[in-house]
Image (cartoon, rainbow over all chains, first blue to last red; front, side):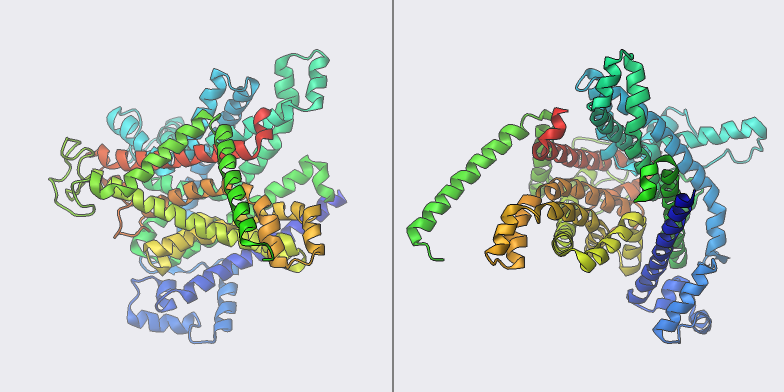
Length: 323
Length: 298
């Protein structure tokens, strides 16, 4: 137990500087950008009088190192800035949109892990067979297809032409649904965006699972298991997959940042009311405080989720605790 | 420089023959992977399209009202026209130039930076190594697409900023790959021999270790080109693209508002994007099989 505690504290100590670095990167971007940093901090919508008033409040008349310290202390207290265009603080904007994004990311993650592992295992059981070629073919197209284009094509084919799915949004507007009907309605809206976002990761996990299964299945303990007379299924799943899953788990843990990037595109295609559409709109309006706020927020989420994955490893694999 | 002219020219001839036989060997091995060969031909076709753009199109790209708006694919407009009556075929063809240039330049800058950092880190080790690897870790952990997006949004949406932003966020992968190779090679006898003979550090790094350590970087580079092309398209799709060059991502951004009325506005630029990335991924797989034959046999 003491070793777990040591691991947790060590990982937390490593994560804290990362968060400071993110804040510093933001500060550097704001201050090296062409033009007045005040406009970046306030957005291009700010009037001259407002800028003058804010200059003092944000300490922009102070020396640079003081500005830096002020900025860090504000962000650490959870103040990510203020969007004049929306007359709302950036952190409350993000919090409003967060649940929809998390729902999308979580669904996509489940789909990609379940289907990806299934396809990868299927492919690895008979390398270069028809089944394998089918699975690796899907995987190849999956990693080459731009997420947003896949979304557009699914939208055109299945929602606009076939009419099987709703075109945009998270739920049917104008009708108040309750209970199970509400859940089904949201799932119906969720299907296409979730598949779109999952596609790339599904493909990647298929490739990863196949490669690591082939590696594991070639090892001595598998030969032993077969020699003992265990049937193919037990060897594949019981011995092979259990050991082949480690790289897959690593990828799943590290893919949070990529999933966020993909979610931005997916949400923009399907008008999914999450952080992605918030970012898309802010980019169009040059609402810089929101852009910078989302970057800090997502970075912190990524660092924290990596931290959690690392610590989980410590529990799963005793070898990691001692390194 | 003590050898005579004849000896050195003889050696050059030998070197040429050696290179030719190496290319033959490479091709024999590479062509065993049929998908990789298909990828190479596809990539070559896309390059030809990009180079021959003025010859194979009959409308200038980006010019509006060369036809009516929202014309579906016809003989005159093979891919149809967009909301401003621009010819989509011309834009798709010229877009290949943008994508390839962005992909090659961004991946090139990123590879050179990565090679410099990785070689320094792996060869010298110690504190420099620690520092450089900590920096590269930051980029591996952070949401780099978002970072590139913000860099472009704040510094201006032009093609140079896009290329630099992509390179800035992608060099660490190369650096770490090359560092790992340098770590194994720097202990080998031939490197030791060069050191004992008094070679300078820079010579050992560039002419002894690098030629042996470069293979994973080459494989990675083909994938980095695909990633760079996808990143540019993604940035443009979100509205952080350069409006003054024809770009597939920008066309898809524009198509988003008209999905109900003009499927062709989205279908063709995206299909080209897919084919380009597919070809690069296939070539990458082929190179990987060639450089790591061990993995293939399993």
